[in-house]
Amino acid sequence: MSEFSLQDVVDAKDKATEQTKRLVPWLDDPHVCDECGAYCDATVDYVAQQADYMDVWECPECEERYYRNRD
Image 1 (cartoon, helix red, strand yellow):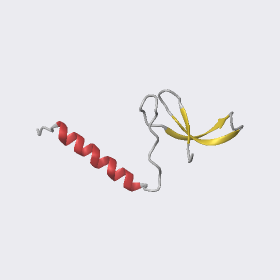
Image 2: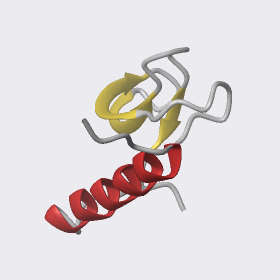
Image 3: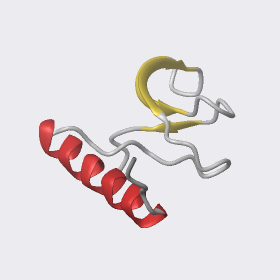
Image 4: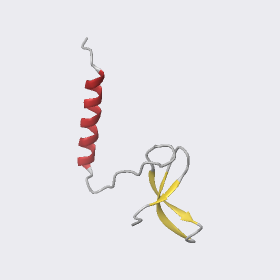
Protein backbone atom coordinates (compact mmCIF):
# COMPACT_ATOMS: atom_id res chain seq x y z
CA MET A 1 0.00 0.00 0.00
CA SER A 2 1.45 3.34 -0.98
CA GLU A 3 1.26 6.35 1.26
CA PHE A 4 0.42 9.83 0.04
CA SER A 5 1.73 12.98 1.63
CA LEU A 6 -0.37 16.05 2.20
CA GLN A 7 1.55 17.78 -0.62
CA ASP A 8 0.56 14.96 -3.02
CA VAL A 9 -3.09 15.55 -2.18
CA VAL A 10 -2.76 19.33 -2.62
CA ASP A 11 -0.99 18.85 -5.98
CA ALA A 12 -3.71 16.46 -7.17
CA LYS A 13 -6.43 18.94 -6.17
CA ASP A 14 -4.67 21.79 -7.97
CA LYS A 15 -4.21 19.66 -11.09
CA ALA A 16 -7.88 18.63 -11.09
CA THR A 17 -8.98 22.24 -10.64
CA GLU A 18 -6.89 23.40 -13.59
CA GLN A 19 -8.13 20.55 -15.80
CA THR A 20 -11.78 21.26 -15.04
CA LYS A 21 -11.31 24.95 -15.83
CA ARG A 22 -10.05 23.93 -19.25
CA LEU A 23 -13.13 21.79 -19.90
CA VAL A 24 -15.45 24.80 -20.09
CA PRO A 25 -13.16 27.82 -20.41
CA TRP A 26 -15.90 30.29 -21.34
CA LEU A 27 -17.69 29.95 -17.99
CA ASP A 28 -16.89 32.50 -15.30
CA ASP A 29 -15.27 31.37 -12.10
CA PRO A 30 -17.91 31.37 -9.37
CA HIS A 31 -18.13 34.36 -7.08
CA VAL A 32 -16.79 33.84 -3.56
CA CYS A 33 -19.19 35.04 -0.88
CA ASP A 34 -17.94 38.11 0.97
CA GLU A 35 -19.68 36.98 4.18
CA CYS A 36 -18.73 33.30 4.59
CA GLY A 37 -16.23 32.52 1.81
CA ALA A 38 -18.31 29.81 0.11
CA TYR A 39 -18.58 29.53 -3.67
CA CYS A 40 -21.85 31.01 -4.94
CA ASP A 41 -24.30 29.42 -7.37
CA ALA A 42 -25.23 31.20 -10.59
CA THR A 43 -28.99 31.65 -10.81
CA VAL A 44 -31.75 33.92 -12.05
CA ASP A 45 -33.82 35.43 -9.28
CA TYR A 46 -36.42 38.15 -8.75
CA VAL A 47 -34.82 41.33 -7.40
CA ALA A 48 -37.44 43.54 -5.77
CA GLN A 49 -35.28 46.69 -5.97
CA GLN A 50 -35.13 46.31 -9.76
CA ALA A 51 -38.66 44.87 -10.05
CA ASP A 52 -37.29 42.35 -12.51
CA TYR A 53 -35.62 38.96 -12.80
CA MET A 54 -31.84 39.30 -12.89
CA ASP A 55 -28.74 37.13 -13.10
CA VAL A 56 -27.36 36.76 -9.58
CA TRP A 57 -24.81 34.80 -7.60
CA GLU A 58 -26.48 33.18 -4.58
CA CYS A 59 -24.54 31.77 -1.65
CA PRO A 60 -25.77 28.29 -0.64
CA GLU A 61 -24.47 28.76 2.92
CA CYS A 62 -25.75 32.17 4.03
CA GLU A 63 -28.15 32.99 1.13
CA GLU A 64 -26.39 36.29 0.38
CA ARG A 65 -26.96 37.50 -3.21
CA TYR A 66 -24.71 39.40 -5.60
CA TYR A 67 -25.47 40.76 -9.07
CA ARG A 68 -23.74 39.01 -11.97
CA ASN A 69 -22.47 40.97 -14.98
CA ARG A 70 -22.24 44.06 -12.80
CA ASP A 71 -19.58 46.51 -13.93
